[in-house]
Length: 455
Image 1: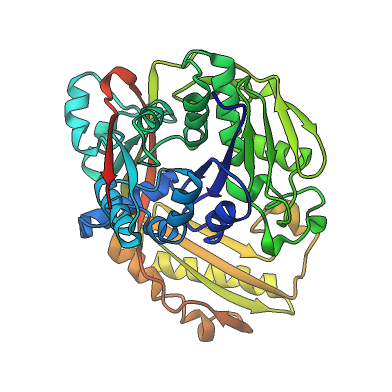
Image 2: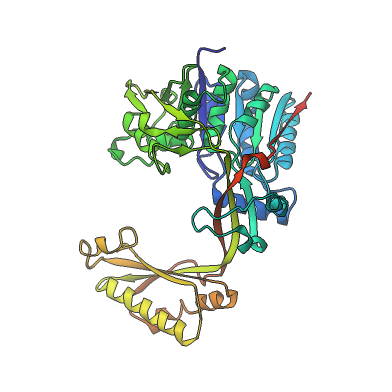
């Protein structure tokens, strides 16, 4: 058993800094590189890509990244774990193996499948899975014909199996962000899956670095102007120990900051009840976290407690929910906000006169109240310019399309001093809605396969 392992964050989302994983591999020692690409909406995007082209459906940026770092991964024996496989893990695996052949390198690629249940919804419902919306209580039957994606949040266990099978690169579909970091600790330290305190510690370590540089100085509220060298920000690294303690840090000489403040802010990110952070692996208690700033971009995290996991997996589903379109017009001083509000009223009256029906019409006045609503109006009664941003949403494609044709006429048939009309005539876009549900773990069967390229 190793005394310590270093797990580096390489991506916080699909579209994050492309140089981050390259820097993590090249700027200092690491044992594992975790790459988080998937968000709820991303699953529907990759599913739609696969429907259009069976060769797609995964994070294509992952392949160019592996092409750039594979020689270093092999030379330094760094293992890469990523959920970038999306909904087409086989195609992602084949693309990675092709990169390995290009470089003339032998590499073992582990693939974790079983999260994608879109094609098995009817069968699962027959077995008793209601898949009720966790917020509304509705059954999935209400949207069954409009489902675009359905993916189970798998935990760390299948990744551990792949690592034990000799995989140097592990690609998964919808796995919890925290599981990408927890799995190496279980594998290297031999933790039992019911050692709840240690499993909770590894889970919280994953939560702290899952969003990339958000825990190393990026998007930092306190004293953000004094975070050094943001242009060369270093992504976070966890130094994990067998007893469940870990240190959050980054490579020396990189920009950004790791402090008690940056780590604490990330601890609060999307956690709900801090005493019950529920994952497939454990229920972690964030109220037990102790943060100790060691200086020099090092924060020790210890004292974490956990409780037994639940008998359910969370399921992230998306479905088609009509169409939307958005448009903007910018009005200049004087009386910019009065002009923008008048323009909004005129547009709404014309839409009503045309008999157009929408589920929702929403207007924001950017530069005036878009961020803080009525609270900001008294502080900024007469801005020099304001952007009227209006959007509509509804089931009728033609109605949404017709809305887009009513924006440009406002320039010459409405209030004066329109100084900006961005993006041309807006076109309807499909609305993808989110459907969270729970499913009994006994109904899900994760599968692991390790492919070997011998060159």
